[in-house]
Image (cartoon, rainbow, N blue to C red; front, side, top):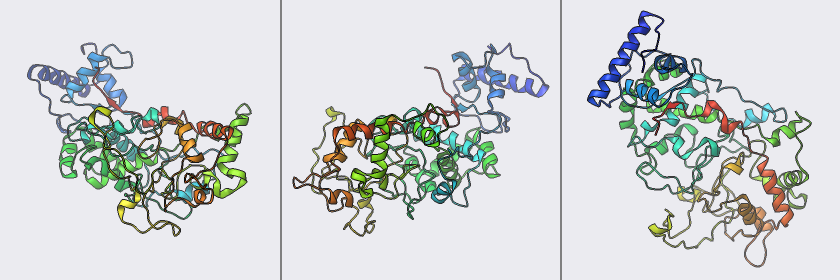
Length: 459
């Protein structure tokens, strides 16, 4: 299979010979433990696309077929390994459209001084994000629940963890997590804001008993044995030392690089192309979103979903459940993993004082992710209860349930029947859905910088 490779130097010839020997040894003995960095003669270019293709692309077609992929994986002890660009991609530059003020992004940027975004840090974070070695049984990665084609959300209502159990809440989209400090607030991460920083947030799913099931104490020695991590950590942080703090920082850097600001909405707002014009229905939806019902700003969607990133400054109660609502316990036959008797309290579970002086507590409050790419991130809400955007807008229009922690806009627009909302007309509902679909950023969901770098076995 590899006899057609032509080494260019004695060193390369030796590496090819070692690779062939490893392939033969693995095929005979079934060795499956990953080779260590020192065993594989690893350097900064070992896992570059050019180097790996040179070693394993026997037919020189610029890609690895099933047999070549098998040979590569066997050469490294049967594990998945990353195939990376020789030079790291640019993770630091924000592609800012003209209509977005640089000062606005700077004011909302939550990047800490001790963890600036770098290209090598983003590269390491990308590898960690897609690496199944971070889970207890080597079956689940961060990317298992945050899928690029779904704008890094999960198309499932609840995500399946490493052991087959389901998560309690819907997996959120990860776009624009860098720009969350809005209106003087520094909100936390997750639906309930339980993580104060992105560096803290990224380590929690790894240690969650349902999601990935690892402890950091068990994870560190595992990563140290993998051949590709020492050099990646050295490039990112100056030494090959692998610590939980560095894992958190690298993952946070990768997530902060996921900026989505290139949609039809942006191109129309920036007027970069005369052919890019929103339809009348989309423009009506934009006006309604930004200016509110009847031009009343307090009734505007933008009060809570702030353009241009469309992030939320804090968790809100939007009347999804009554305070004393009961949820029927689900059987296994329903396929619904939730089995709760009371509503999800969201931020209220953390025991913090109310984040709003006009509400008695935080019960039922949740902080949604950015609305960028929302047409791709169904199902919606913290429990994935709505399958379509039409259902979401229908809820806001007149299905908002009374609750002592309900947002002020809903209280001011309530009805005598108990349910409240913005009372959108049918056309207004259609307009809002049309506008939300203009926020889709196709370049974001196809950006190679955010894609899976691993060479996977062909099944």
